[in-house]
Length: 200
Image (cartoon, rainbow, N blue to C red; front, top):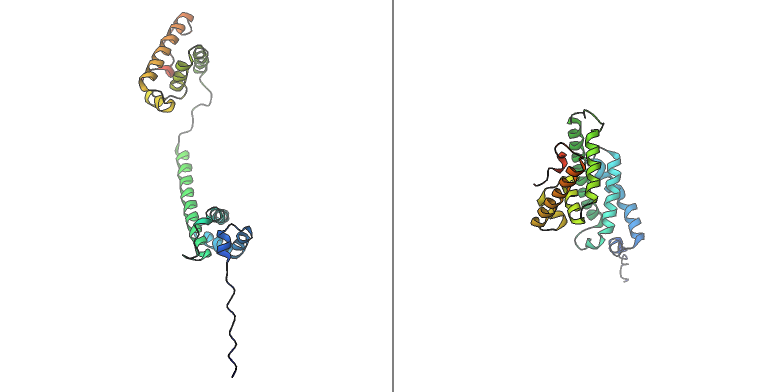
């Protein structure tokens, strides 16, 4: 009596292992095999077809870059890819919601009354720029941050890493020098420009 013929074991699908090992051929195979499933997931959750295509591509890019985190013992490659795809879809939906809020906010802003700069303000800024160039570097830097960037003393200290007391000293001395030059030059018989309102 002859023994029954035994069916050969099915070939082991090592796609996930090769993908995890960084085999670029496996990446192509994974895209060919599972790209449609990821795209279907994206199109079922996103109204915009272009967004769905972007999400599909982003899913495979993220999967490839993070392939070390794929563990074949914990699940299939397609399940892992769909999990990444869901997160990418959610990210895209959140980004779209933010963009919508920004557009709505901009639409609600009042129309600008004039696009022409105030000539007096432009001249003041140019004159002050010339005067600032004559100051010592430390004083000039602090006053530029206060005048051009409209930073407070505390913010300047944070940005530059200079102690708050030193910042105040530099600004006080710089303002005094500017005031003396301003008065001697006769550049400003009236009050100082608002941008140099000084100590805050």
